[in-house]
Image 1: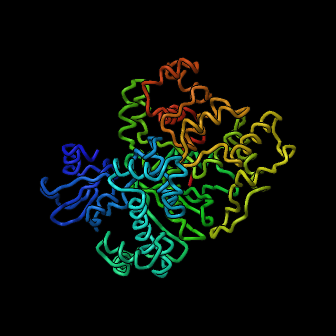
Image 2: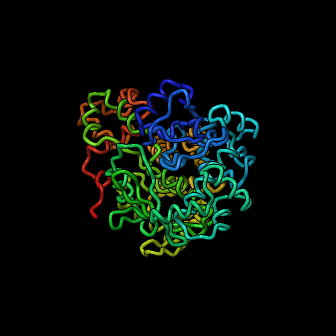
Image 3: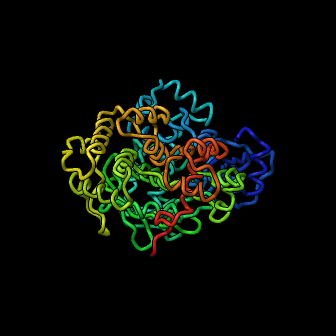
Length: 490
């Protein structure tokens, strides 16, 4: 979008928050870059430059605005809407792959050479993977400086910097303040927190309907791993360097996020997974505008606009839970998952109490005794086949996976039918166009609305909802009287 100067100029002059994260506005006279919605008096059009990423803005010599904090804007919705090389790379960079494994590790996960990855990222985003990772490290450093009472040396390495000097230089270059000055500024605003406990605000593009989003997560919560308490959803997180516990609370203009991590190096990855879980980088205006063009769906959209797709913090975990939930009630699926967690999950300490385990990995479940599963023999075989495929890496469902390849691999597994493939594509892979024409709730809703109710006819009808069929499913599900559709009681 940044190449469409007229469109970017209109968005910046209108202070349109919908475009935050889509592009960045740099001002040549002040050498500052901002969100399109920055509240300060706008510069003259001839002094504006538009960049596709914060990293590109920084590479061009601009520093972040202290008023609108462009580094903290919602991410571009493109990275969750697409499954091409650039989108997959951006999801992996957000998950911290470059910091952990370098650019060669990123390229290996994508199945491309480092040169190809570098070339395509530069062509679309104006910056290579190292610069993009550096911009993310700067944002992580700012969060830790402002919200954690850690020494600066610990923050430097927790944010992914190789040296304290690189940390100091980057913070000064990006924010035009030293790390100490950033902390002093935050203390004046009363934003400090105790070590190990971080309180953050996760921004999103309005509108956001929290009912089905948090209702779904709470209704399907696995005991010991997830819970709804005091108006917030809480769960454990398995992270590259350790584990964590997150509390997510819906607020009118943001999601309140409290993180307790065993290793601060996991901060960026934890935030990325929480944003992905709640689909916070979506563009609800674009989604709802298209769905409203269907007169049968328009009343549902108008009633509660901004519905998101509840996704997953761990794709492998969700795939296992999807198979456990085949042809059983929500309560039964929770029971089956809870038994797996108790028998094979890793115990953790929850500072607030209530959560007890991490969901077991596929490798931890590889030695599962099928006779210990209280389910039909055919579904046992399906579960064991899925676990084996995940544990042996024959099936890849991570943030950098290819959606078409993952679907094909899932479909080859015995007992994995179209419903299971598509629900995993929707919630684990994050495909916004995944569709469930065989789902009972979808078919009932379609029949009530006078839409075709048979899977084939409904699939043909739903082409008008593309590429947002996963969101259409959320609106169809909302017609039913099921706990997943309601924000739980406080």
